[in-house]
Length: 235
Ligand SMILES: Cc1cc2nc3c(=O)[nH]c(=O)nc-3n(C[C@H](O)[C@H](O)[C@H](O)COP(=O)(O)O)c2cc1C
Image 1 (cartoon, helix red, strand yellow):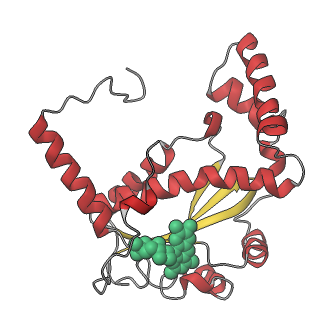
Image 2 (spheres, protein in one colour):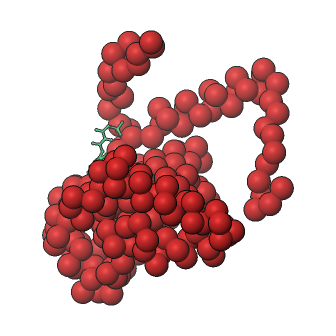
């Protein structure tokens, strides 16, 4: 066991039932919270827990093409509000406001220095394995997923990975009674320019999505979802 890994999770039927109920309760509790109680702050260790579930999220090939920036500066939040129509109520009131960055197309293109760093220093692949993986990844990007026609395709591929972390962080927040709102209601070019101006966004990243966290001030309307028959198909 390394890195706090668990080899098994053994639950009896009762424990499993309880765990499932708690998880479903969190999924029902979570809703896209439009305004937060500006006077309530999420305790630091609770927000660290949320970030940790983002960090531990899976990503394609394990390349973790993300960075999480916690934006607490009220003046910059106010500036961002002008180009973020989807966060008018949350930018000023969120206890914690997260910018989820994705690695740029250059960074995630096969053969890049970042991918070499990931293969060698993080994934610690032996030389032979690294060669094989590099060839496999190139085939994946060029042949299987056809990601090489436009740089935006590679950027979006990286951004797709960040949404896994986003989902996990919102769910883990809900499991400890913390509200959230995912946000892609922003003008990408203008928001990125603003963040670059402030030195928050470097060339190696783009702005993928945002998420606001805090505590609700009003109860949400009833959850609306299509029925399972419409969503799930067994073949
Ligand atoms: C990727 C993503 C981006 C979203 N962007 C915004 C946004 O900019 N502003 C907003 O208020 N809600 C946003 N939402 C919230 C959705 O509108 C909401 O999740 C959906 O209507 C379902 O409602 P529920 O989350 O309350 O169950 C976004 C949701 C997702 C998943």
